[in-house]
Length: 165
Image (cartoon, rainbow, N blue to C red; front, top):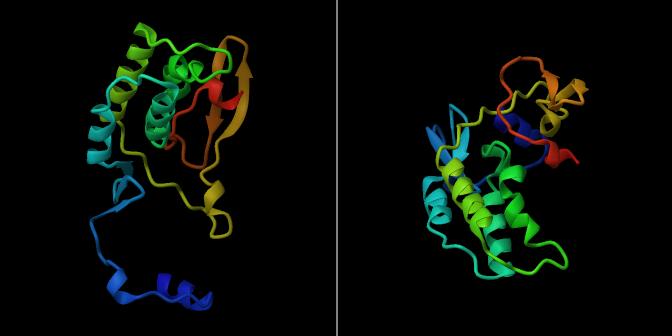
């Protein structure tokens, strides 16, 4: 078990800093429970309460905050593009309807964020690389690859073509 693994590696824990048999745990802005992982509600509310940025630094701060939860937002890069465009060199900061729509859409998508399944740990040697998404084929008229995994239908992380370019 866990205690044997700790002992084997010479690690110690302090009982007063531990919590056992918890139904859910808050960790790095996420709520982790038996169903999976989701953003903490108060963090989502704080992001939704942000007003439209008035300078580049505020755009960076917003993108940093919402980017922490990008795995919960389908097509994050595409939606955020009007905001990231403002950060490009030689672009004059101008907040317009496109940026407003992007800000509102990101906030809205974060509110309805799905609960992401826990990763399927298939081997104790390489847990950070699993579950692995394997590309089988792509076609020119289709931006997303066909995927396979050990347990089909369990992939719940989102990505877009611009994430991999």
